[in-house]
Length: 348
Ligand SMILES: NC(=O)c1ccc[n+]([C@@H]2O[C@H](COP(=O)([O-])OP(=O)(O)OC[C@H]3O[C@@H](n4cnc5c(N)ncnc54)[C@H](O)[C@@H]3O)[C@@H](O)[C@H]2O)c1
Ligand SMILES: [Zn+2]
Ligand SMILES: [Zn+2]
Image (cartoon, rainbow, N blue to C red; front, side):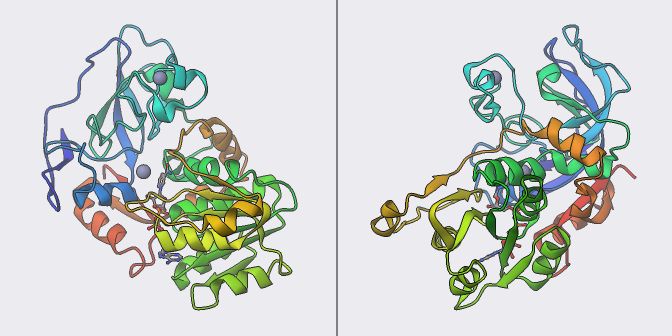
């Protein structure tokens, strides 16, 4: 088969590789019908993720069809249409049992293994370990172009943003960074009845998208960002401030927007230390949360997509074939210039 192979910083190739096979009785093999690219894949290509070694097939999001099942697999059969999520889980270790498979100890100490510790989903086929506990059947009425965004971006915005930030009916919410993840938070904030959702971004196209995804107000980043957001909340600040960029300055902005008693939910992946003004924050009774997505909200999100409450397909702005995967990476890498959010990649 063909797959996108990592060959060290800035080097990747769509090339012939051996077909994946069943290695453990709990494995299945999935033919990839739809995949996409994540910001994390760009980090890997910059050489930022040391655990990804040369020869690794990239990608951790897919929708596909089961082609082969191991002897111990009971929940899936060849022909089933499945969502392969970013997180793999054994279902039995202490972290899986407390509902936090992001730290599944059995699969490698961390639940994110595709395109990281084992071969990934930007390929014609992928081996999925612990298939019974990791895969999700895609209901009829949910298309591949919708389901693909439930593998990572949508659960991340929902779990690490909206749920961790404890958005409640009537709340005012700010989302700093309206990329795929921030927009996913905006899209799912409505499920909890936020009264006001303020998107903050440097990019006008992303702010336009934010309004389409359910933001009530937008603030373009400038010298008065914090004052403008505070003014939109009657001078009080927001109940929940979600950070979805991953820079020190954006976390500081998110922290400045929250009112006493509120929550700051950091989603961004940070590469450097952040100095927080604890001398001002301690007395504000605020909470700060952070973490890796568990993807345990996928069943909920699948139902909401199936019923039409979450228009997940809006996330895909560009479509490519596997043969055009280099072009897909170029468009995604220069997303702002290309008015792109997420790309949809299919075999043909
Ligand atoms: N915690 C997790 O489990 C998890 C999972 C997936 C992604 N992430 C992280 O979430 C973050 C967002 O991911 P994404 O895919 O949406 O990224 P993205 O690059 O698509 O979006 C980032 C957005 O931030 C905006 N931005 C840049 N600088 C800004 C600034 N100074 N102020 C306000 N906005 C600014 C950009 O214009 C863009 O719209 C990343 O850090 C990513 O690594 C975390
Ligand atoms: Zn990802
Ligand atoms: Zn586990």
